[in-house]
Amino acid sequence: MDVAIAGSHGLIGSALVADLLARGDTVRRLVRRGAAPSDGARAADEGAGAPGVRDVPWDPRTGELDPAALEGVDAVVNLAGVGIGDHRWTPAYKQTLLGSRTTTTSLLARTVARLDDPPVLVNSSAIGAYGNRKDEVLTEASARGDDFLAGLVKAWENATTPASDAGARVVWLRSGLVLAPSGGALGKLLPILRLGLGGPLGSGRQWWSWITLTDEVAAIRHVIGADVGGPVNAVAPEPTTNRELTRALARALHRPAVLAVPRFALRIALGQFAGDLVASQRAMPGVLSRTGFTWTHASPQDAARWVVEANEVSAPR
Image 1 (cartoon, rainbow, N blue to C red):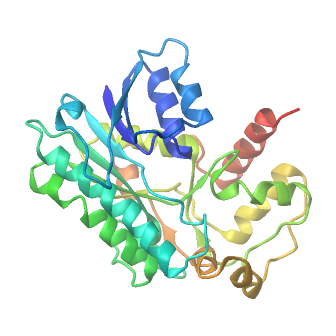
Image 2 (cartoon, rainbow, N blue to C red):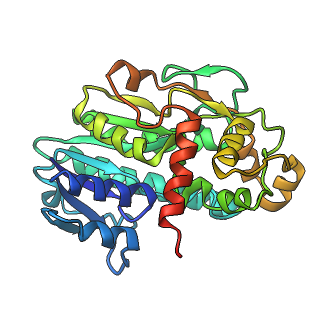
């Protein structure tokens, strides 16, 4: 398989590159001129038996991307976009969040549309599409929400229209909270839990639909090969509350998790982003389940054990 990847230096992208290379696939990484590769991306290049990686220059700001560089690929995977929780949501950063997603997605979609044999476009998205829905069970057919993140996701997904209009199969991979041994959503939480100082965020009753990094990468491979299009919820089959997930992680660490972080404290520390942490999204992976996807970590207990054990193995001595 030959896969082009935008956002290959991030948490998911680095893991996807390494996984594809280990399987003997070919990777074309879309790289911006002058951008330095991450440690994870460099490690992926050095994978044993790797067939090699081709770097394809592009610049979404100027619209630079040679369609010939994508000829013959089986899939284009778009993981580009600045981090949702990297900064407070000032008006300027909201525009950065939007622009970093729609500009890159639009360029990729237009380029895919120009190819004689358009590949599948797997476009990163998020269950934030559904907004805060409390205890409602959410499927790919559920209505969109009406908050900032839901609007962001709508614009992000709509930017793929040129590719679908040209006949390309387009998948919107609506990912939940991606659990990884380091980085990502748990990057700051695990050290606090390890000290026995962590606990639920807000009430802890909000539903957190999650997926491990291992299964996120596997889900991307799955939708490349499966006959699916449109929204696909990339989540585990057992959504859990924030309180239950935090407790599962604490138990795996053999630590207590009783010190709840009140909502007002989150708001002071994080601004509007705090609302996303206490939002409730009980999303179910209907499409993945129907098309035969198998999870490595299906329960929060499985996920917590894997995260903690992998974190301990990778921690510097």
